[in-house]
Image 1 (cartoon, rainbow, N blue to C red):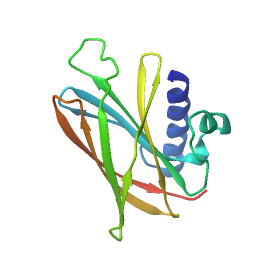
Image 2: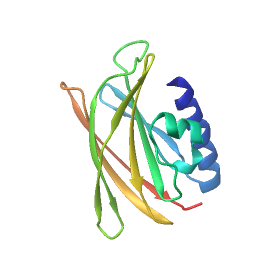
Image 3: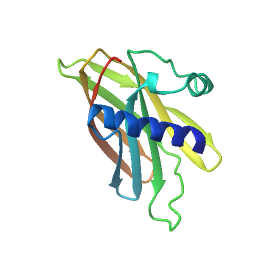
Length: 145
């Protein structure tokens, strides 16, 4: 999974330069270091998309979240439950269904989202490990390439 995350990070960085927006972000929420990004699925290679069952489409976005345990010195990946929604500017709400992907020591949560050109989404995501629960909120504007 390190390979896919590195690939996604490279793609995200490129997308960030193209869109002048930060594509990968991190927020510290309690004992969680939450890394998150939302990108257009066409930035993925066909091989990566096929491996993880992601639809490569000009109108499909990918939300990638990983959670690290900052209460431990090595900040290992943390298995959590993630639920959330994405709301656009006209108030339409889409439920996000996250799939957990484990590769070695890495754990990632992936969800797909359909969008239109220049559509902005406001994400409201709840992350819980059974002991603590936190909300992650961020905004992303998607473009059709």
